[in-house]
Amino acid sequence: MQKISIVIPVYNEAENIDSLVRSFYKILEKLPDSEMIIAEDGSTDGTKEKLTQLKNQILFTLISGEKRKGYNQAVKDALKTSKKDIILFSDSSGQHDPNDYFLLSKYINDYDMVVGYKSQRQDPLFRLILSKGYNLILRLLFGIKLHDINCGFRLIKRNVIEDILPQTNTFKKYNILSEFTVRANHKGYKIREVAIHHLPRTKGEKKSFFISNVGKVIYIMFRDILALKKELKNNEAIKNN
Image 1 (tube, rainbow, N blue to C red):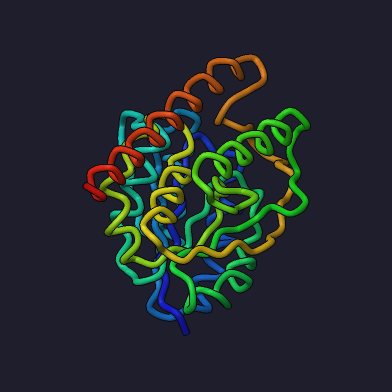
Image 2 (cartoon, rainbow, N blue to C red):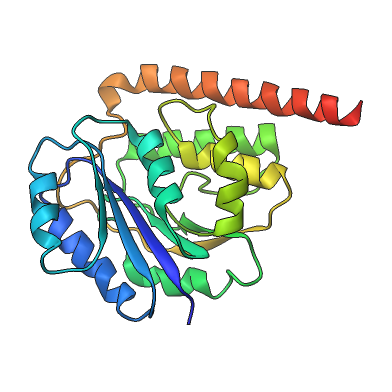
C-alpha cells in the first residue's frame, strides 16, 4: 500500500469542514502510515474553531495562522509540511470525491504527477467558459496537453515538489497549481491526466472569484502567464548559450 500525505488548504469553510475532513479520513484509514495535513489560512467564519474540535476526534496535522497568507502561499506551506513520498492534494470545496484517489493511484508509479480532470464539471457557465479559455491559452503558450491544468485534486511525488516548488513564485495570487504544473512539464516530469468526479458545491461559496470581479482576475492571470512565459524563454536562451 502507498504511504501518502493528504494535503488540504482551507479558508472559511465552516459549513463544509466537518464532512470534508471525515470523508478524507476514511481514505486515510485504508492507507497505513499515512498522514493528513489541514492548512487553515486565517479563517474568520469559525472554521478554525471547528478544526480544533475535530482534532480531538480525528488524527491530522493542523497548520493554522491568525492572519491570512493567501491561497498560493497556504498551498506552498502545506506541501512543504508533508512528509510522505506521495502527496494527495485536494482543495476544500467539497466538490471532489476522496475515493477518486484510487483512480489516480493506479498511475502514480509510472508518472511523476497524476492530475484530475473534471470530466463533467459542476460549475456555473461563466466559470466553465473561463476555464476552457484559460486551459487553451496555456496549451498554446506552453505546449502542455491537459484539459484541466489547475485542477485541485492530484497526486504528486515528493521529489517533484522538492524540485519545482521553490521556483514556483511567478503566479502571485491565483492558480499556483497551474504554474507548478507548467514548470514540472517544462523540466520533463511525466504527467498524466485522469477523469474524476466533480460534485456540485452544496455548502459555502466559491472564493477564487465571482463574475463581479472577473475583469481584474483575468488581468492578473494574463500578467502572470506572460511573466512565466518570458522567464522560461529566457532560461532556455541562457541554457542554450
